[in-house]
Length: 397
Image (tube, rainbow, N blue to C red; front, side, top):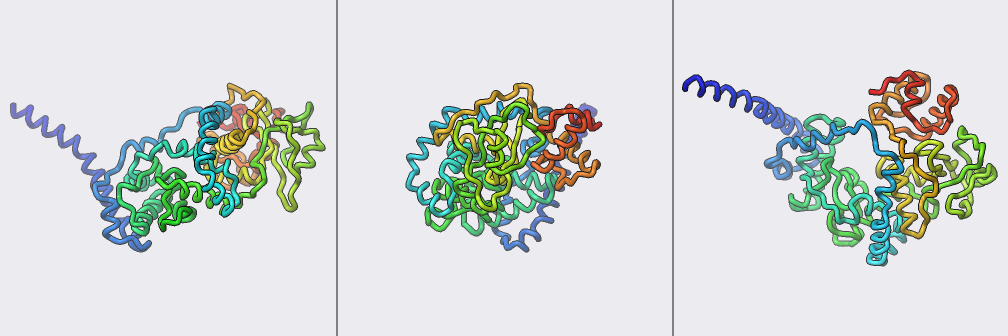
C-alpha cells in the first residue's frame, strides 16, 4: 500500500513538474515584458488588467505549427471565396450602408465594392465573430517567441489600445493570431489606420460598421490606393505568346494581341503609371491576369496573391462583373512555405536579389524564376513548382 502511494506521488510530481516549469517561465516572460510596456506608456493597472488570469494557450501555440504539406489550389481557394451567396450578400450590404459608403468613398477615394469585398472576406460582413482573448493569444505567441519580437510588441500595443480608448476588458477579442474586429486589424494596424468615421470619439472595429468601413478605406488609402484604377483583370493571350514578357503598359499589351477576358476595353495608361504586370497565378495552363499597383495595395492587407485576386474578383462580381473564363488547373498546388523559402535561398545563391526569406514570391522573383525556367527548358511563366525545385537541385523540405 505504501509502495503504491509513493508511486502515485511520484507520478503526480512528474506530471506537475512541466506545468510548474511553464508557469514559472511564463511569469518570467511577464516580468520581462512589464518594463517595456511601462516605457510605452502602459500603466501597471492596465498591465495587470490585461494579464489577469492569462496563461499560455496551447491551441494558439499549436496553430503556429499547423502547416499543411500542400496548399489548396489557387482556383479552389478563389472559387470558395467568390460564391453566389457572398456576391448577393454584398449587394444587400451595399444598399443597407449606401449613405455610409457614399461618405467613405468621398473621404478616402476607395471604391465601395473593394471595401465590401474585404469586409466579406475578413469576417463575412461581420457575422463571423472573434472568439479569442487578444491578450492571451498575443501573450502565448510572444511567450514562445513566434516571429519574435512582432507578437510581443503587438501585445504591448493592445494594452495601450484598451487603456487609451477605455474599452472594457471583454471587448478585446480577436482571431487566434490577434487580428481584431470586423476589419481584422492587428493592434498596430488599429493604432495606425482605425478611423472614427461615426464620430463618437472611439474607433470601434468590432461593432460599429461605419468605423469598420472607414478604417478599411483609410488603410487602403494610406497604402496609396488609386481610385479608378482596376486591381487587374483576366486576359486572353494570343497563340505563341512569349510568357517571358511580364511588364508593359496597357497600350503595349493591346498591341501584342492581349485581350480582356470580359471583352471590355483596356483602361487608358495614366501618366507616370508603372507597368501593368502579366501574372499566371497557377502557371500558363491556367487563367492569365494583368495586375496593377492596386493589386499590391490589396496584398498590403494580406500578403497573398490568391487573397488579392479573390478580393479583387469578388469586388468585380458584386459590381456586375463576369466570372473568370479560363479553367483553373485542378492539379496546381502551391508550394508550402518551407519549399518557397528554400527556393528563395537557392535563387539568392544563384546571384538574384531576394528581399526577404519568408516565402513570399514577389513579381521581381517571378521574373527571376522565368529566367531559370527558360534555362531548363520549361515554360517561363514565373510560377514556382516542384519541377522547378528539382531542376534547381532544391530538395523539398
